[in-house]
Amino acid sequence: MQIWGDLPLLILLLVTALGAVIVRDLIGAVLILGSYSFFLALCWAWMGSPDVAFTEAVVGSGMSTVLFLFALFQTVPQEDPSSHRDTPWFVALGLGVLGLLLLYGAIDLPRFGDIAAPANAYLSPTYIQQSLEQMNTPNIVTAILMDYRSLDTLIETAVVFTAGVACALLLRRHDS
Image (tube, rainbow, N blue to C red; front, top):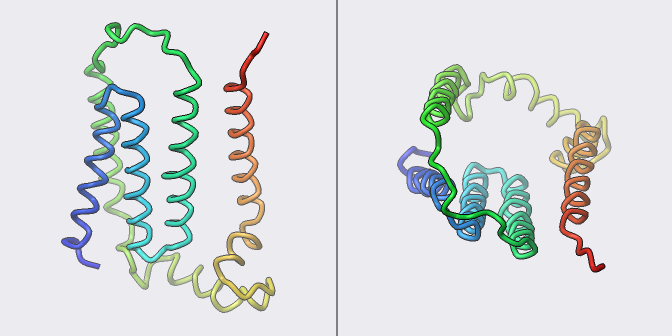
């Protein structure tokens, strides 16, 4: 995978991320975030991770957009739009410094697809060679998500369920 093939998708990601921050209309921001999530799903698919791409497309692009739109249509605007203030300079500066620190930290990460990276040299061969024998699950991805990382997956599912219940409780109608 060459950088020039990824560049248009990276530009779309950056443009939609900036657009979601800059736009003042909430419905527009929700739709832009949905498109950002869709482009992110395309990135995951491009990198050969279809399970993560499918999850991002369904949860990020689809369900989150629907829930945000539902929440917007169930609420009544109570704030005066003219009272919005610009972002303080120190917040923008802090986010810029944080971005630079993250880029600096990314220098030490192994290159994508590096065969000598710890995840590829130690962890992946163990999963590939021993998952069927240890877990009796023919699909390696299923063995990793549901057998090796089952507690983590269970907690993630509980968090998503709790967030859904909280949204339902917040958005319920009080007909009294």
